[in-house]
Length: 250
Image (cartoon, rainbow, N blue to C red; front, side, top):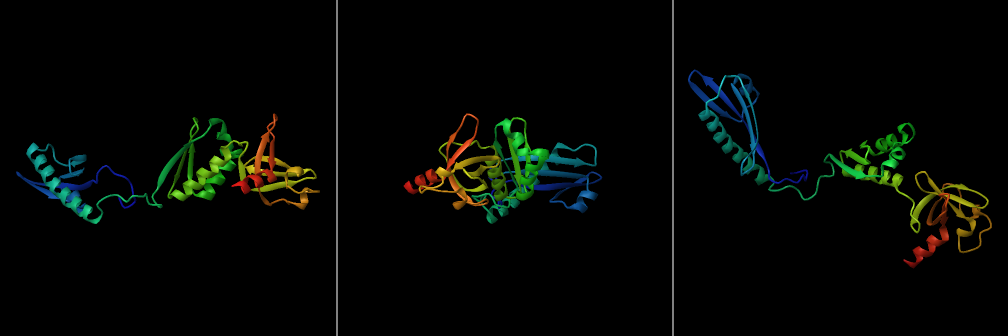
């Protein structure tokens, strides 16, 4: 509950023990290692305020009278209730938010055709994702990607990274702070997502006339572009001035 894990009801538990001496039986509550080792029964009972949720028993004697079992359950109920009252005095309900340090697993669904892009050549891409985010990633054949991590921030970073890889370029979308990967005489190539570069023609760099692309950008610069078209060969046509116009409208 402290970690913010949602529960239908809080559960308390107790280990009941048994000592048999001839015809006499002694039922013990909340046994520890010594009583477990020397005793004749280890009877674990857990439950909520309305009933038992789990039982587990180890026996060293043959047979257990129903009356003894009933007495152990009744005595265990009192013990569980005592423990549960103390639990609820300390924390009456789970915290509203899951602890950022609570281990968790989240899943996303991707197009199965994109799996090899996440894995990369020789597993290079997925190893980089897990290494830099500290997550564990398992990919199913149907495109289900399971991401596990000790904290939520790491999962979100891995999730954003994966989605950026599998995302398809969208005509009309503005891509902010994307790197210039090369500058040529007629324009510059900008990487709008991993493995997807597009051309900003010199005529699309500025509202003002540009003589040389190198007058405006250099390799490594971060620029904001708009994807204006994808031709029939899959080539991306980008525009810096169209992106600027649209951002100025907003």
